[in-house]
Image (cartoon, rainbow, N blue to C red; front, side, top):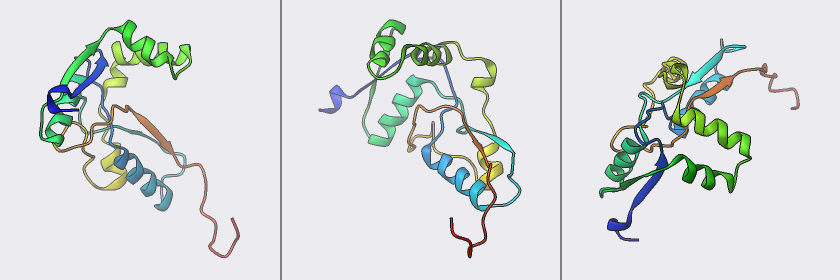
Length: 151
């Protein structure tokens, strides 16, 4: 497909949510699993800023070095597309979060930096990998075994 045909479609083009790069989820999970002091502590993982689907399309275009046109879907178009691979209650909940997020769902968390010791990721930055994913929770619920004990 040529650059004139590049497009990204999503509903609620101007509703910002704090997406997160999968690499940041992996880095935080590794820090929690391999480091000490995380037992029973919940972390809310988000990217460094809340970003709209329209802005994500711009960031994808910047990463590709060519424009990506944003196509705003109606709620009904998005619902029909999601129903092809998600159960209806999940679709309705997802659309509610995407279209009418609560303030807590839009909050940017400092936990990636707190857990990993480095500034959180790439979502929303020009060369980044916007993922569309939102808040993720990580909780350490196990204790490391001595290396001499079998798993």
